Image (cartoon, rainbow, N blue to C red; front, side, top):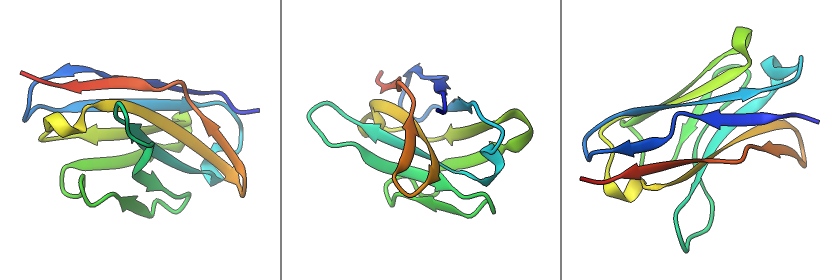
Length: 116
């Protein structure tokens, strides 16, 4: 079992920045793919960004050039730096730890609200 805990959400004005953190338990963190997803009210959960063990990254088109995913294997933590935030980025952001096919472990989510 893997415990995944997100933090760093909050209220920010349009154009502002936030950094989300996700801490995952487990000694094999270094080989897992980690990801961030978001879910807005009334919508399905969708991909924001992923990062592999080799630090290859993948981003949704809507966040390319604004968000940066990174990882610190020494701290078992993955980050999502969110810049130039827009009201449409408002959602609950979830972190996922991928141990292997069919082995996804999700956090409880952290709310990000972009509003003036």
